[in-house]
Structures are given as structure tokens and as C-alpha cells.
Picture 1 (cartoon, helix red, strand yellow):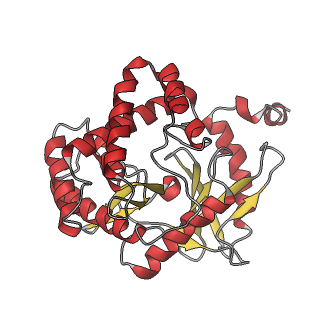
Picture 2 (cartoon, rainbow, N blue to C red):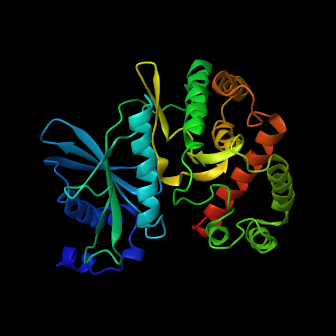
Length: 312
């Protein structure tokens, strides 16, 4: 009876473990749309979405991602998978390979009575490797810089996909015609404090100076921090494309730079990252220190807003 009563609790009142238990059943239903013989389903404690490792009875391993209700639309998920599929076809970069449904769809939408809204689910092949933080080396960041530049070079050709801007201040900003308008900025200041105004003014000026030409702006990953790149046998793999969208290439690099700012050897790691990037894209404003610092300031504000209102 206690378990039955627990299942009657509103989804919003459950902790992360409770929500994951509910979503596990939804994930099991989603997997019936795929030609994957499931042997075991294991929750993964990474990222804002709920993800599960899927061990197949065929010996293969996969990752199933259950989207947040406030996450990208089905069309936007299709666009993300279109880029991943193109990267798999056209490059040798190590990225997650999408698994289509039985009906050759890139994603499936599943409902469960214990979850208040239908969820979009996507399945991908598992990517081998280790996530690192304190033990990151300049050599590894150099390789990540190379990979980032190659992602940008490929993303520059991926025009017209249904993905938003990665540098909008918040979910509120993304819902506006101009995600960096005065109204959006004032709302950010009201939430995060007057001290963010200078950082926002600085990045607005940098964005205006850079412009939006294909040499500085295109489809980017949007979240290249330590939980979205990993290392295996000397190669860098990039995962976590759920935040991909259009933005300045410098923003993508700034996300990585900001994420390593707590490390004591951050200066060496930063230089190695930028050297690796320049080895592939030598003539670029993306590695300019002033430009990077401005976008790093924007990233800090975005994360601050996300923590304050839970929707940024």
C-alpha cells in the first residue's frame, strides 16, 4: 500500500531519484520502438536530462535520453540528430551515432500515466572513454581544440536547421524576437543583480563588432564542458549535443575556458586549447582574448540565471 500511495504523489514533488524511477518505465516503453534487445537499463547521473545506459543482449551498448518537458521540440531534436548523422557520415570525429526507430524515425515520443506530459526520447550508440577534470593535460586540451575547430568547420555548412541561439540569456530570452533585447537584459538584471549589467553590455558590443558572417558564426555544440568530452586511446570524443545551436564560435570556446577556470593549471590548458583550435582554423577571431573573456562572462551570467530560475 505504501508503494501505491507513493506512486500517487505529484511528479513535481518527487526528488531526482523518484522522478528517475517514474521515467525509467517511460524509457522502457520508448525502447519498444527500437530494434534493440534490452538486457539492462541503468540510470546515468549526468546532465540536466534523464539518461539511461542501455546494455543490449546483442552485446552492444547505447544511451537513451529522455528530454525535459521544457527542452527542445521534436523538430529541434530532429535537427540535432541531423547534424550528428552528418558528422558521422562526413567526418571521422568521434560523436554519438544516432539509432533510428523501427519506423526509421530519429526520435520517439512516449507518454506514461505516472509522468504528466509526453517525453521525446532519443537513442544513440554508447561512446567509449573517460571524463576528466583535475587530471586534464595540455595535450588533451590541444586535441579538444582541434576537434572543436573541426566541429565549427562542419557546422558552418549546416544552415537552416531548426535550432535556436546558444547565446540567448535565458529561456525567457529564447521566447523573444531578440534574445538579447533591453527587456531581456532588464529581466536578467532583476534576477541576478545589477553587477551583471556590465558583462552583458560588454558581450553585446563584442557580438556587434564580430558580426554574423560564416567565418565567425554558425552551428556550434553549445556545451563543451568536462561532462561532454571524453578521452579514449588518445582520441577525443564529443557527446551531449542537446544544447547545440547557432552562435559565435568564440562562445563555444568560452564555454570550455570557463569550465576549466577552477583548475590550478587553467592558463596552460587554455593556451593548449587555443593552439589546437588555431592549428585547424588559423585565421579566426574566435581565439582573441578579449572576445573570449566577453563570452566567458556571458556564460557565467547564463549559468547564474539557470540556477536562480531553473529555466535558463
